[in-house]
Length: 157
Image (tube, rainbow, N blue to C red; front, side):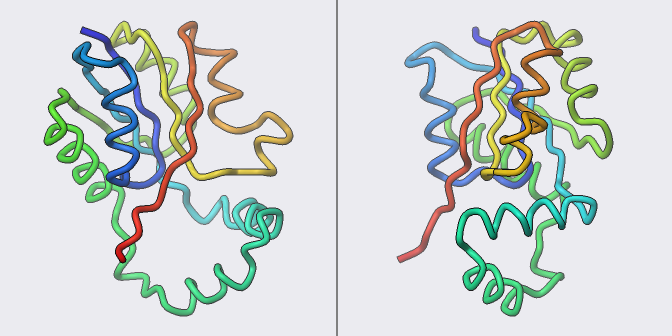
């Protein structure tokens, strides 16, 4: 059994569930999900990422249409992700971390004896450029391989 820590900031899409559950072929995988929701402290970085990605109009439209009550809480996001991983046949547990995500990740790797870490997030151009994103920082801290994957959005047609 392969043990993976999956670090996320929002619920996994169907595409992401399929991706992470098939990375090791037929070998069974146990996931420990570390959910670190991005809070208001990251609004400036997210705005810079949106500008860098050329998404200004799209983001402005999304913000007008999004009601705060529609935003999933960290607990709901974690539960949705765990349910999706289990439905795909994987074992999955998880927790929410509010502060110092890389420190929490390092502790979780030691606690679980994980074989690898997968950091699955949306692009964070500014942080990535300065190597301050979770994956870059984790590579120097956790002592196991760290794979960075970009999150997908499922689109209803």
